[in-house]
Image (cartoon, rainbow, N blue to C red; front, side):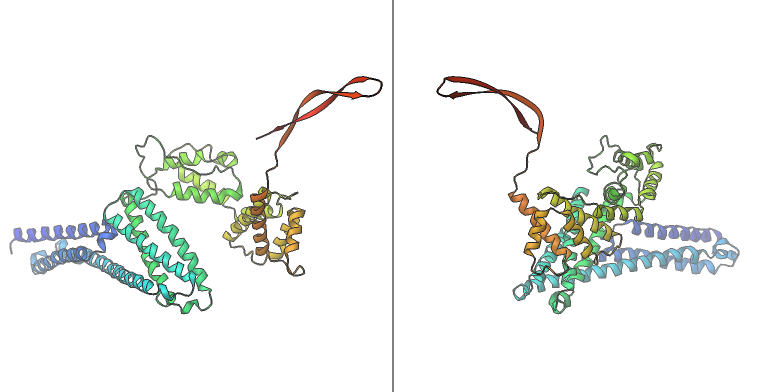
Amino acid sequence: MDIQEVNKLIKSQENDSNELRRILSNIKKDSTLRKIRPEYIDDRRKVINDVFVRTQQYDKRLKEQELLSTHKYITLNYFDNNIKKYYNEAMDYLHQCEQRLQDVQKINEQETATHSDATANLNTLNDPKIFIQQFRISQLSKKLSQAKIAITEEKPQWRLKSLFQSIQNQWQEIEGNHLELLVTENALEHDYFTSEYFDIIQRDYELTCELIEEKMYTSNEASTTVCAPSSSRWKLPPIKIPQFTGSYDSWNTFKDLFTKIIHEDRSISCAEKMQYLKSHLQGEAAKLIQYLPISEVNYATAWELLTERYEDKRMITTKFIDKLLDLPTVRRANFEQLRNMHDTINECLEALKNYNIDTSSWSPILSRIISRKWDDETNFKYEEQLEKSTEIQDFQQMMKFLEKRFKCLETTQIPVSKYNYSKHLIAKVHTKNVNNVGTVKLTTTIYITALNSRS
């Protein structure tokens, strides 16, 4: 083999090495929906194998040439360190795609079987909760199919977001109901559990959500940060996020909303996120970052400063406990005040649970707090309806009574007008008194307070 032919083979090996690397890169960039199609996997595998077989043949011929013993192709082991490396990576990646395809096919088969079984079992259900659960699963399955079709048909992003939100809402109901069924007596023997209805729909839900998220953010895969380049939008979209003033007990609500709507949105640049952030801060919170101008680089710093200041678990839990202990006293039966008491108690307890504080043993304490804070009439009615007044009162039952009480008052109570005693009128009342002597006209000046209703 002459020098010219040797150089030609070496050049071919370099080109094929680059080709394998390019194929691998393109496969990784392709959407998950494409990569789980059988024909896609087969086509890519055939192309990769054809290239690799050719490089093996050329490598064998090159290694037979003595004049190449000191060439970099031999000394650097170019074939193993480049060509074979890219080949193995590409084949491994296709194998992962194939495994994913098998999982999807299995889910679809199980989904079909589950739907058939659910239809067949509708007349044999004894537990209405299981019937409702299976109906919800059937509805979610249809919604997941719609989402997959929307991805395939390249539907606009707003449609995908709408489907994504709807799917998540349906899933939350199914997941919550599933937890209730787990503790139901004899429920585990039902076909709902033995046929793994929940497990099947869960896998399909997770896969579909992943496909939707990948589709929505595929244009941003090349970005290394969550910040997008500044866009050409002239007007920022309206966003309903409550103002944060620096109150510890409202930090979690603000943080969760801002994170979901702004912080995690890759279509918004960091400079725009900074503008959103500053426009939703007041008081001490605004002062904390007031010296940071709006820019791409300052957003991460501003968000970190706020998180470090207000992500104070001790302070937050203390605020909610104080809020419980300092509930306003209700002086007379009023649905607004009783409703506020009910909602405040629930708000505080849920917030404490989010910080892994076990409040399940607080029943006697919470019951006593309520009985000291609500009005005498409500307390009398509560005591009157008790069957066993000597027993320790159950907090949950007390909360149910409180809810029933304020709803009843809301339905029947006429709101008390608020008056402003600011205007006085002077009226002269003329009376006539007739007696035997004659008629006497008496003029009496009476001050009348005018009640001016305030809206």
